[in-house]
Image (cartoon, rainbow, N blue to C red; front, side, top):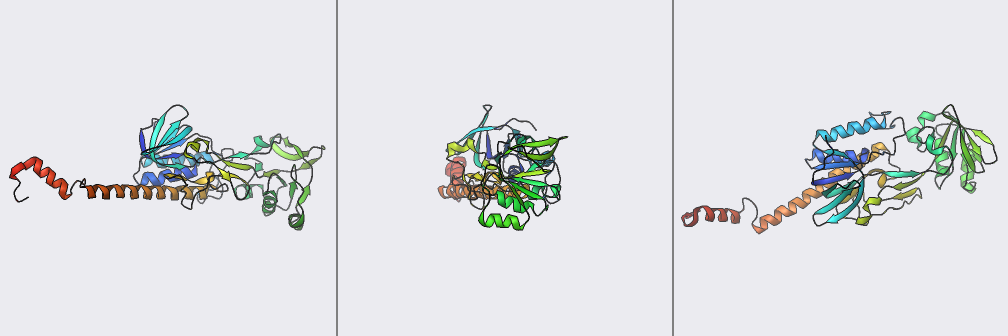
Length: 342
């Protein structure tokens, strides 16, 4: 399979993760011309495995993507490496411009470009991300069960995150960092669950033999920890679609910015659907894949409705290939005055 783009497709899918590939698979099986344009920077690349995905638990993320690409290609879909620079509306659909100068047209768009994790500026944090610095207990909790777990407060969901990780370990410490110390009901909940609260800003992580060994505070105190959870600010990766009027908005949870849609993934811009983390910030691989498949089916149904309207209009105008009007025109052209009885 080459990276050579055709000029036109029924659907262009932006993003080749679980959501984008699932949507493309559904569309390709529906005999739609579809191309997935993927920049090759998946959010879960640092993780050793995808967890909680039925029949694929623990599979390396890269292997899951390769299998998905092969399945899409097996039904005639394309998967092309590239980064989308801009999308604009045209009379018959959309024009998608890649950063390298290539362009392609599409009747519909499925945006599944995911999100960007904005981490606190703590030395050592980014390099451990996806290893022993974690965010989702359902993705990584089993792997750090019964370990000494720290939770770095970074936003409104940090206390909730600490309470969640308490399910996997009875040794959980909440580091307030730059956030105020919990009070009222939250403080009572943490105390009731035996979660220690440490005030003071975190200066860095302590790494020994390529493993997290502890959290160092500004005053020099080191609290031994084997894993650290942090709730990043999650921001939808959608800058290229601003020309369509699509801009991320603050998520109701306060966890970041997402692109709103209805239950089918349809956005406020006609012809544009979204799926996965770009709209659902907390979606795991399984739910992202399901959303992509659902969006793909909805896009196909939308195209069928359009094609049916066009066919009905053509029939009404007498343009249908076997209408009475077209038969009369053919007979006149072929038989002329000899068409008695026809």
